[in-house]
Image 1 (tube, one colour):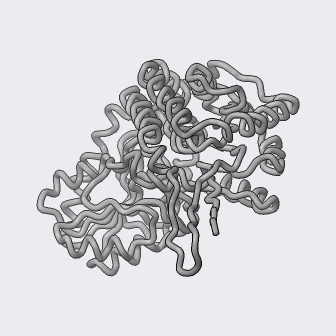
Image 2 (cartoon, rainbow, N blue to C red):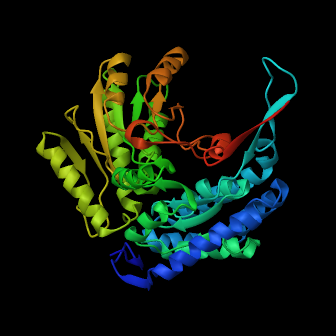
Image 3 (cartoon, rainbow, N blue to C red):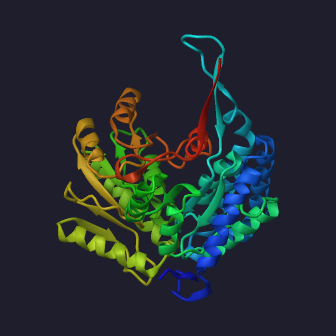
Length: 444
């Protein structure tokens, strides 16, 4: 049974429980979203919808302290990172407000034969279901909702069970921004109710950010009912270092790439693939920096999350890996650590403050190891050779490659992966082109 509750990760104490939606509430939510799409989504102009989403951006900025406090209560994220998440969410909504007219403008087509004209005009498709995760309670919603409300689709939003307070606060923002009832509807739905929502003919698509298992389950149901899905799932992102003219700065970037959100990010750097020429020096500096994180590390999102990570680390050690860490797990608090001497077939995604370091000899071996994973979300390449960077970027099997940079995501940059990391894109121009009817209008 799905239980929506705010549980303090640092203590395990349940702060507040929220009632799960009744079947009647789900039916009413579906009816409202469908009605509002007909009466609001199709009737309003792009300019009107852009003004509404701009107000959502403004309200995030005005309420960022309160929203950040809620996130910290729900999943333990450091407060300054919570503030950063709200600011990024506001930037995403503003980006779609600023660019909606351009993104949704008619697209003329040059005819090869015949007379007259042809164009593609973009229309909303209807009700969409968003299934959101716990690790970024505001940002993940912004990526899905920003472009789709601007387009005129209406939203049913099913948040993670441990983020019900964020869900309620976001619903209030859309209400206060002036949206019609049914444009954005938060539902505390069970998994069984979600299956019914996906099957409902009024629902035209589903977006899921979460685990590989959750994405697979949703995609299976959606496929049976011919519904489009966008999936942003797990990752085991490689961080390749082949050369550096400032190894301390490269190590700092590696630590930053691993420890954002206490390592609980799908696109965090997770596998550090280091050329043999600098492996020893990198490992020494990197391990020292990682262990320093123990002084100010936040808890993981739950005790269960820390227990899962502990099991994974122990399995790695059992295969012969060497673990350097500081301290022991204490409830949801997990000590930072570095795994080295790993077998190349250790492919698990470590969702927490533990880094896996591999030694390779040269570019080809680095690329081979980077691609030797069922995932393909993000990747990072550090090298002083610009031509080498371009070669590797072309060869890596991932949706995103960042060269000599971490933490440079932006509202304008498309986000998404390949292989078992999912499919479809969010953010940027591509984010507004997923759930859309690109209607051809040919005039003779």
